[in-house]
Amino acid sequence: MSLKPLGDRVLIKPDAAEQKTASGLYIASNAQEKPQRGEIVAVGAGKLNDKGERVPMDVKVGDHVIYGKFGGNEIKVDGEDYLLMRVDDIYAVVE
Image (tube, rainbow, N blue to C red):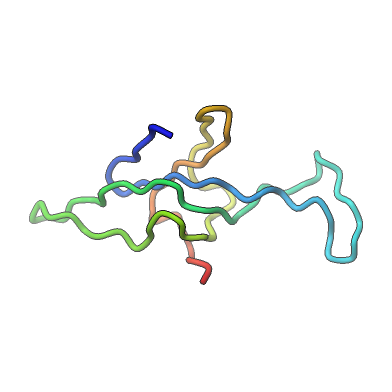
């Protein structure tokens, strides 16, 4: 992939939508919720503070994260769906 986020933005590959409920019932494709988890595939350099210094990012490539349901912009790169969002829209890193 040849996409590098700028500033404090990250590129996330969303996890697949849930196909079944916990009890084993299948969910119709039009009723599936958008996933709120994914893997970071690219990270920007970080934003600049008031002194012009880069603030290090809290996440790195390969981290699995939880983000807001309506956060970021959906983009398509090489036929794959990704989310481009600010690191502030990420709620947690799954360890």
